Length: 97
Image (tube, rainbow, N blue to C red):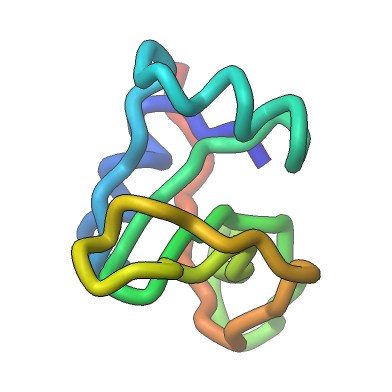
């Protein structure tokens, strides 16, 4: 799922990861492999959010899905795998545009 700037900020307060900016050299290749998303990297690998339904949480939610893991200790090369839901839900309040 592609996030707007407000949703990215909200995600960053709930997820210990860094967002890959749209102008990052890897984003075009990642979009071609995984589809149009906002990509996050953390110490375990590459993540995205997918829409999630949660009656326990107000507003729109997204589930963190792992797409790739680091293949080296320096965290410079990713090894893709089948999308794996992590069970982590992020609350995304509706945009006020």
